[in-house]
Length: 278
Image (cartoon, rainbow, N blue to C red; front, side, top):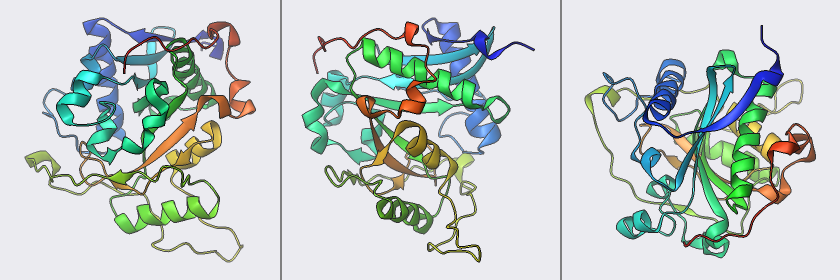
């Protein structure tokens, strides 16, 4: 068995490397999370046009030669933004209007398509993925991450309850309060069934032991590991039918010390000034 020190991050650049990332994401999203993707299931890939943009970086973590985690780091893309009538040209802008985030200028990047198989999850693998995202971000002048975090439910009432709980714990930022866009329901033959949901109460309650039920696993992890804050109410994800997501923001300067302590600082260059056009 290889040690955790064999974990390393890099960027998928070649066609075969991108193909491996899309195959891996499909295995996680469809095979494990049972999310019906709006793509041809026969291809068995999570195919996204955003993967092919020069402004996107597919960060991957390997243990030896085995791919064990991946996420996409997307910088603002003026061409896509102009075509969509959006501010940044992020995939997230299909779901949410981000005009209120203009103060970030070029320092904002989108984290999307984060995928780690259950049997590969662990503090070492996830931390190495965050380290890779952080290292690439610092070298590119990124100061903040934004992303749509999976609520792990297909019911609006449950997703809204999670948002209220975050608010009660001072984990919702009212500075931006971005709003969901009106989206057109896209129907396909392989997305007729609602996405499975995690058990979650419709109202926050306290059990007999006086302990509140926990938030969805992914939201709890983002809040704890990255000091993330919700910046809007939940909305349906247009690419994952029936799945609700919450927009969340992370300041790289405010990452918890415990998270930074897990990073190999020798792999992280000092932050550089932004020199790209947005």
